[in-house]
Image (tube, rainbow, N blue to C red):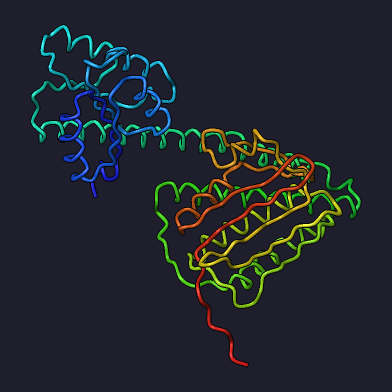
Length: 370
C-alpha cells in the first residue's frame, strides 16, 4: 500500500487524445479518474467529488485554466485540492502565472507519463500527510480542551466537597455526612469514566488498540451493559429494558463493541428525565444486525446532531441530572463501529427522545445444549 492508493484525479483538458492517454495510464496505475473538457464543468466536478488532485490544462474553451484555478482556490470546498498545470505553454511568464493562480506544479507538453505520475504521487502524498497532520492537531486540541475544562471542573467539585468534609465534618449530622460522601463517590465515578474514555479515545486515535473480531452473543453483552447502569438509572427513576432475541450474534471485537454500548446506554440514561425509559433492541436483516438504543429523553437539535461524530465540532452537553460529558464517548463509539465494519447513525429531535442505531456484521453463535 502506498500513500496514493485509491486516490482520485480530475483531468481537465479539451484535447480528447490527451485525455484518453492520461486516463488509461492513470486508471492502470490504480487511480480513480474523473474527466472534464472545460473549466465550468471542472469546478462542478471538483465541488461534488472532491478529488485528491487536479491535472489542469491552461488552454480551455471559455474559462481558461488560470481562471479555473483561481475559482478553485477561492472556494473553501476546493481550496485545498492541489492543482498541477499541464500545458504546451512553455514561457516562464506562463509558469509564473500558474503558480500565482494557486497551482502547486507545472508540467509542459509533450510530457512523459512517468514524470506526470511521479509528480502526482508526490503531491497526493503531501496532501495526505497534511490532512493527517490536521487530524493530529485537532486531536491534540481536543485533548487539551478536555484536560483543561472537562476534567478540571469535576476535580474542583471534588476538592471543594473534600474541603468541606475536612473543615466542617464535626458539625455535620450523620445524614448530611452520608449524602456528601455519596455525592463525592458519584462525582469521582463520573470523573473516572471520563478519564477512561479520554485515555481509550487517545489510544484509538494512535491506532494502539488491536482489533480482535469474533462472534459475540449480543444479548449477553447487552444484559451486562444494562447491569452496569442499573443503579444510576434507578436513582433517576429511568427504566432500562431490552428486546434482543437469544442467539443473535455480531462479528466484532467484544471489547470495542462493549465500549460502544456502555457509552450509548450511559448517554441514554444521562439525557432521560425521571420517569422516562431506555430500550435496547436488535434484529437481523440479511447479513447485518441492527441495534437500537432508544430513549425518551430531551432529544438533540439539528446543529448538535450534525456535530456528534465530528472531532472539530464535538459538543459538551449537560444531562438531566446535571451530569457532564466531554463528547469523547460518541467519537470513540463512532471510531470503534467503523473499525468493526459497521455504521452508526442517530435520529432525534428536541423533546422527542433519541435513537442511536448501529449496524454490525452478523455472525452465527452456537446455542447452549439443553
